[in-house]
Length: 443
Image 1 (cartoon, rainbow, N blue to C red):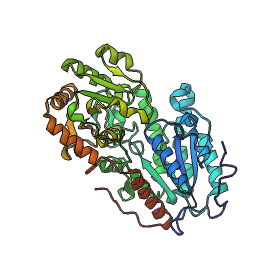
Image 2: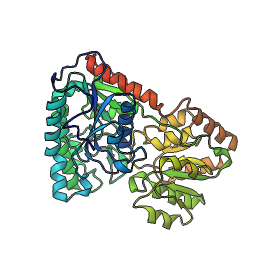
Image 3: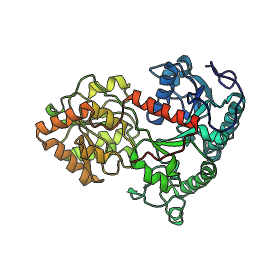
Image 4: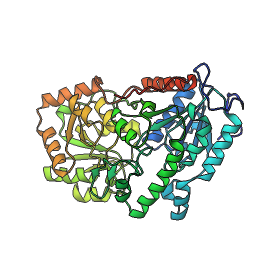
């Protein structure tokens, strides 16, 4: 692995380290920052995908991360072998550290601050753009302080609500209800919403106060949100609405041909088998309805799922290329998340593959799913989930086929193509360099 602190490829050296944006609108280099370079899903997968896409087009890319994780085991190989310069702190995620070390570095990661500050001092140019993805697991609020001198050329990507909400999801875990409070208000501080303990909530509040100190004191170029429904919660949490930009996530089908959902009866779940994803909720509901389920994924709830639904098919972790073969006998994809997720990649990918999707109303994609005829939306809770499962099972096959065909046609769709996604981000980079006035594009 080549460490770009010492020698970034093909990029100009020091000079023009001011945060004032100017220039042609074409970056010399894109610096992507993320907690991990691992091949895990979610924000990390998108950050990797972006780095590889930009590098393949000839753009100089540096990937600044806390850990490499499974980078070497990724299907596309290590980033450093694909034309991307990698700067890695060699650290572990918070939950993989001791309690005291996690508490301390989670509030302020001194190594991340020092390393990034050094890199910027040595290699920044007026045409360098910074794109921050995940920071809450390793990099900490310290990364915002290090980026402050180049804030005007920095895009903050809101894959979740950690920029606005201390627990990152606007959810009261104790009751399972969506939180409508203003973050760090008196009401917020008095509410124990953390899924672990009151002490953990206090720690999150301390971290969020540190974050706000640096987040709200700088003129960041833009905050990219992955769904228009994120605008209000982000603004409520103190994000300047004039900085918001819509950057729908990219998605591609999991199969080369449309799955004939209308012929099938079983349903499927794709993702981590953990409480917040609701896999056990699906198993319980399916058991009561006598419905067959395929669980594509792995996690701590595997045994509980098996106990609830002995005949369930649990495939374990699958490479993306092999997921489609487990869906050929599936009628619908269920995303029974207990938290208000801003985006559901598996829902978008399943819809493009021809599967109607079933999502809770707390998911931000639920309105699109229901209004665009791509599946069903249900009121959170056991009764709502059972009702949606019963409805898709009893729905006439012709209606299921219409949903299936509509999703496979991607008109309308829950996401955008990878090329359109990268083009949109390139437009944000150009805006950052040109110093264009920020205009809200959320609708």
